[in-house]
Length: 266
Image (cartoon, rainbow, N blue to C red; front, side, top):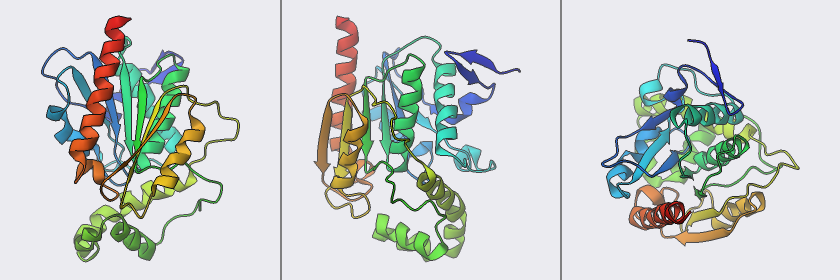
């Protein structure tokens, strides 16, 4: 099947592989597009599906090299991955529907880039939610991460990851895609003069996150023209999936309800 064009973006026949969508209980009125952190897959968001309003369709980015795409080489460019995900969404949603993007850690940078591309295609997000994520800085090292640093980073994310670094078979399975994702993130740049994204930003940081502290998360404010909200939430780097999942889902639900209410009034 030949590629086609939708809103000035090339849509490949297999573009839907970049997004996983779970069935909804009722006809959906809004979308939540989720982006997991480095090394993780779409299934990180599967437990959220039945905990969000039934009128919400939950979609999650599935980068190559993991889960059902484990046989594919990892993405080499965050910008290229953003092109693919934006095109996939436009292929799935031929007609417009309100949507929110949620990005965790590396997924925050990818969510931002996808939001930019969708806005350029005429699809402006209702909100962008970024957790434990920081924008690139000129001082960021654009080099690959060595094995010792990768092991240290895993433990820095979560001390319980010593069970991974101490199990060579488990570590060997995770390390290639995780190191590839981190290298891709380190190469990512937002060029000077990039137009601000005219969308409200909801920035979340973990009170005990030693990897991406709140001061780093709030630097995203410089890239948005919409309202900025910052929430410091209890927990470490993975707070949206662990100790503060209820809090994050409550914030997300509130935004989804506001999105649908605006649509109903409009």
